[in-house]
Image (cartoon, rainbow, N blue to C red):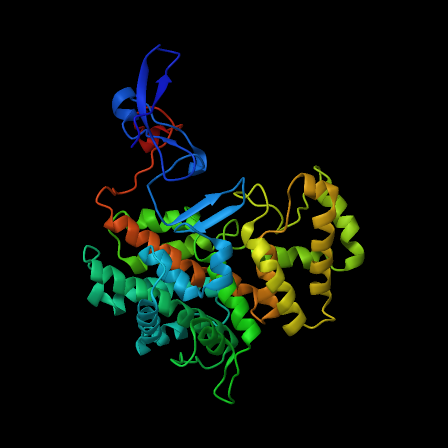
Length: 431
């Protein structure tokens, strides 16, 4: 903590209080208000916690104005170009890039944990055939604590590590099983001879009827998407995982809570909204009309997948994934598919249109990820599930960081009460 102080003066009473200022290694300073209520009897009010730092973290850094995203100090651009998803997961968990030996050990640990208990597979029989995959993900992930309770002592570092490895390993298996249940197809077991992303693809699309060949283009695209979605600082779902974990809840319950938060359309459903928008536009010939609607403040229509709440400049993840999106469409998608033609034309116009350039409404990562998933044959109901697979690496990293921090406390946000003041009970016959 620095020696800098902030002076807060209550103009109504004339009383002032000095509050310490905390500084990180990079980024804005923060006024430490932890003693504010004790010293003044007042709370702060910050709807959505958009200006409140709830903890110290060394995992991910974002500068929205400059379009910067770094994992453990490494620029996302370098990791996307050079890393595998599992290497990035290791980095998030342990803070350093692994040596060759460490990477081989980690890879083997994750691979050996991809199977799920056979009894757990029968859980899927209890879900309706058309249950939303995210509903199944929440339920099955939460139930993992009933099957893997041998390592649930959150105060034991080794137990925390084992649980983290299990979740990263088993999430693709659970996700693919959700898809197979919807399709009415046999659940495919993981294969230890395939990599993390290739294994997921074969569990999704293989059947017992014939051999399945993983497309290198699809595997590369999936690896990149997983890297870009692995963590994003203290978003709603990550904050949910931390808040649940602050009570001492087991890690499987915490991640299940994170999945539930991610399911919200304002968080994990943005790439689905992109495809809904493209289908509403319908045809390239309608683009000009819908661009005009988007510019009209009185019109409720909005271009989904453009701009970002955090990034006030170009989303760095979108810059990275744009080329991959074009590669996937060239290699795997039907060139005559009007939806992809529409998306590419819309992208071209928005990148050149004076209105969007001036307001910095550039295509974001959700614009491209939805298009890529569609080209890979992944149905829209699975889009948020794909997000959950990748984000699990970030969730468990934040959970481990929080639990190992001796200063962490149970989360307890405060409120401004605006209900009725004191009232006396009135018997029912006098109401």
